Image 1 (cartoon, rainbow, N blue to C red):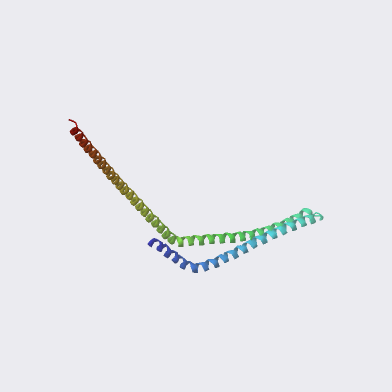
Image 2: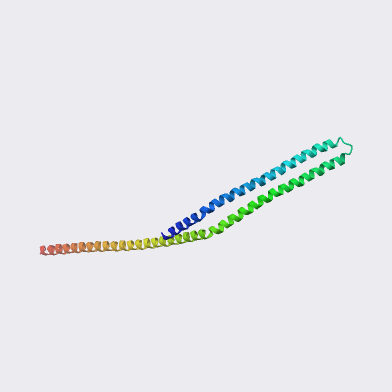
Length: 195
């Protein structure tokens, strides 16, 4: 009973300590989600810009086919596309770095929470171990008591059986003695009647 009250007290303490932390966690989670959305938007914008640059390059390449210096025109279009790709790649990397940073922060927060909850978890685990051990000892004591009760009942049964057998033997002996007495009396009367 004491073990359960300790686990209840530990749970209540954890709840009391966790209530302000829940508000902080909600704000931190909202910040992480907002940052992830911004990172996703950066990456999506980079992809759109890259697709637009690719489409523009194709259009310029086709337009270059009509000019006199075709290769020079295509090289300029490709250089322009490469510049846009570099810029969009940098933007994409920025979004990826922000996502990684959020993931790292979440992991660190989870580890900090796990470390903070470790004493409570350890106390609950110790309480559960104590409860299981107490239950095991009580069960073993009950089983031992049941074995002793069974042995006592077996002894009582054997004693009662022995008493019944002894009573039966006395009754048979008494009956045999009575029969022998009657036979002796009958023999004595028969001996008197004979001349």
